[in-house]
Length: 544
Ligand code: NA7
Image 1 (tube, rainbow, N blue to C red):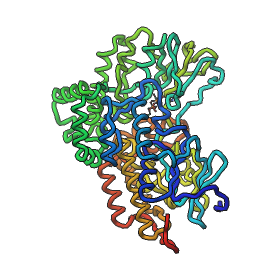
Image 2 (image 1 turned 90 degrees about the vertical axis):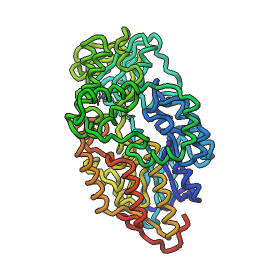
Image 3 (image 1 turned 90 degrees about the horizontal axis):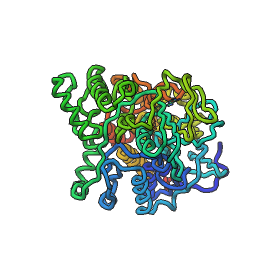
Image 4 (image 1 turned 135 degrees about the vertical axis):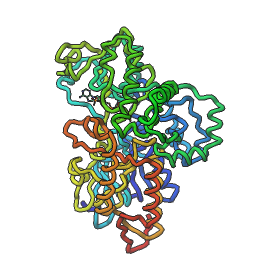
């Protein structure tokens, strides 16, 4: 495709106005680059715009779940509680958009359908769903890792006479469950958060569970003003700790194996983590996600808690997971297991009692029909590659990202930020970067700053294009696979491995080497003149 027909021209085009796109816009605009963001929604927020289901909240502590690029911003915003709810996070992102006057450079309600690289002009032609095209020197995706929702193909959904919703595309109006028979499919983070809230309102809630989940209490609580004041005063220290840490939050790094301590000591440690609430069990010992025996100690601890909380033994048994704890996203909840003690909640194991179809009046399994007024799909996302492959992205020789990645059989990137064959294309938290296994705003800021610095470097050094080298990409991808294979993560069916999407090739596309180490590696690569990239000098001075 040649750039003959386009409506506007920019230095950079960014997709998405969530945490990634908002900061990328700010960063590039501050450096003097003309930048346009395209966003499908009618407001900012990205994942926090769409995931507005009952009970939606973040599982990172709020004082760490924010930007750190601006101390002023950090000081101006005050979180109300330990784990922020979706409406509060959305308010925060709107506050950021207003504070930095970002909206004039965001075109809302606009999807990018395609982005094609033109080798002659060395620019990207970007096609929008309103039929227009724009041109940009740099093309950057801030599409998130979990934005392509997964609605499994259940026969008969079109016949269902009730209302149905997906947690990842929740409507803006309040969904009233009062007096209704509600069914929910899915017990990942979204289902576990929504179930206790819906159960309090509905006449009856039936939970259709395929895989039981490990969850620990969040023990959310309002923040006291003194705590907030201290966090603001310690901004620089907190920022440093977040950026250097493995997981993007200042958590004490475990130094002991779960197997080198006595069972009493271990039990006490797990119990303290359980009482404190949050992700403490996951970070209690260094080998929880590496060694099956160490893992079993944590898994069994949570199973025993389920047995204590859930009064009906047969329900408790169904709720006990058997996969390696932590290899699916470790969940934190408010009253999840307790909810199964309510008289108006029932649990159906759809692994033994399979879903056959959705009927006019509800859901038919191999054993029974469940009459429902409302059906909620908490069935997750086509993670990591899904959002990118929804766009027709084509690099050199017209090769698409889908072709390059062989439909997911051979997804490979350089640092999770760049692709051989795709010059001047950057992915914020792309496949093979730490992304979702680190605190997302921290992962995002690191990528945005690295990309921003790179683009500024190119301007300063009169460089026209930057492109990952094939061998550098191969080495990075191999390293990612090796690090992942040394853990238990790859052994479990999950959205991390792509196993939740029928037919999706199984690959683990998150870099597990730790956010701090990854940040250092990326910085070294930049300091060495962008090692592993081909840089092509411009024939004329670079302006954009
Ligand atoms: P998840 O964690 O992928 O959970 C999806 C749930 O839906 C999970 O329990 C699945 O069971 C279930 N599911 C998916 N497809 C089906 C079918 N066909 N039949 C029955 N059950 C099904 O998505 P979430 O939205 O909860 O969370 C995603 C991430 O968002 C989370 O990890 C955080 O990082 C934030 P399965 O376990 O696959 O057997």
